[in-house]
Image (cartoon, rainbow, N blue to C red; front, side, top):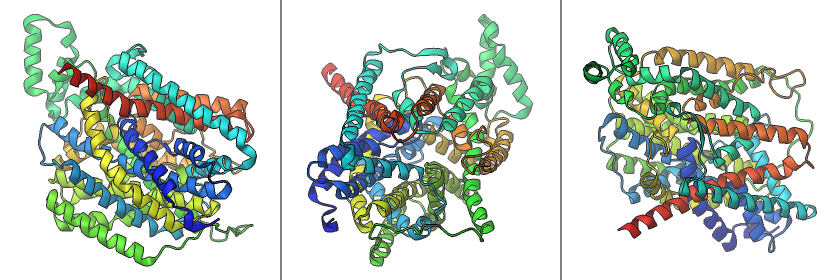
Length: 624
């Protein structure tokens, strides 16, 4: 294969087109589910269809790796809508204007610079990370498998069938999304409207569930049970945040007895709640209590996820130290890629990106230079830790690394809420970009190609993601609204980041009653569960304690709407049963599960993020 022709005009044009769709669709899914979803698999199928007539075999596989890495890069940039949502929630939760009003072009430049920094930060540790053969890289293995299948000459009929499943499912999911959101003809079965307990047609969540292990889906279901059991209690305590301990009992008693009162006694109770009991009066009249549940549950959830993430990073380090006498690889690995990346690329890219990031952040957002430099200085450590977690679990801890930065900045500069959120962005954006660099290198080692070409491809599409992300966020905010009321996009990750910034400004005393104790318990459980998962079964495959909840999944379930957790769990069960009855590489599960799940996600994302907002704006113009 002529490697000089890897990144040709046709590949760049197709990659940019697919990246534009991914950048427009990702914010909707991210704001709804609280996490990004992998749209690269669908992109690879479409790219194989478009390029398959001109390119064959390994040459096509290399170009699919390029396009996959381009889509992953813009999806990582689009994930930054969680930071925009965090700034939005600050105003909603506190009623304060903290002076963060960037224009679209300022956000564009900020996203471009920080994403470039992430690319070159990811290039730095590539050698050490890729040499660790103990990392399983589950998502990269899936990417490799799809690329090999799509480019296998003997699998032409199978490839066509999988592509047909993808396109058909995308169309059906998009149509059902329009019926549900546009016409309102597919209602949900609601069990408890106060806590968002509902079973509905959540297609993106269902597809996501089909792509995760059964243990992840069941862990989310465990989180839903916790919300159902303790949610109302947690919601009351969240509504009473800031109420003195001596007054708490009376406020709770008044709030609980409110339903049996009427007339003057009720008016007197409401006056007391309004004057002395935080947001209890607002809580009593709310149609949904879920936002209060999240404001309490996010503390133990965040504590558990951070503790588990740190433990998951330390476990393989300790294991590698203890296993110094481990047997060498039976078959030495030989890379198929040209791994050369000029040193001056990395040095120049880092120097220019850091300089511009410091200048933009200090000039536009008035963050002191020392604070910006500290946020940049800790990036290598966070990125290495994040890449290891990604390599082990298949899920990158972007928001957790942002939370870790927030804790550090909150301890050093507790009164600077805008700087705290800005530091979270400086941490999260390069983290998200770096998590698309090394996995693409891993695939290239097994398919061929050049590392420098992958870097160039990612740099080319960064402006696409940076341009569309703030635009799409504004459209979604206008169309659906950002918040925890029914019909709004909950942006749970943004809420988690915003609430942490508020707490680090006001001190731990701001936490709702019982949340600090629950957070300590969450830390213990996060460490314990992660340690139990590290104990391998006797045959060496899987954990001996497979039934223990996964901390990251359980923690996230506590801040996701239960309706989404239920749909994810259903998807995971469907995938597990399907895999059980159609096992092996020749089974229908291996052939059709990934394109089916990707179609469910892509169909809802495209209609919900692009077509529905466009239709809403068109109707508004017609009314005018």
